[in-house]
Image (cartoon, rainbow, N blue to C red; front, side, top):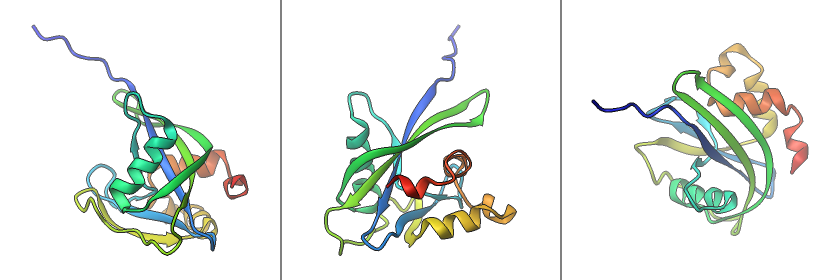
Length: 152
């Protein structure tokens, strides 16, 4: 008889890529949580630093070469209390080349990337319709850290 592996808490890393004109890269998810707005990011791999993960995921997903600078915030994201629980680390990142634009390199995971501002994110997330547009870690980030834009 096969034994079942109990669910584990996973570590997600979200790269908050900010441009010189204070805009942020966001994408629209496909697959799990389809249609939700997200930052570039993914799972922390064994042996990888948090900053390495933010830089790797941003390059893999959006083709942007970034430098991770600091951890902005941490959220506790319970999608399903029996099976899907994440700790998400939000990492401030800057493009090494300000002229470089995001590309959709994983079209099976993301519809596309766009630029927005903290103000636009916060305004949209404050509405009931807007709350449905964001990936859970971003909603938790805004609820737990309402002045997040002042951190970087």
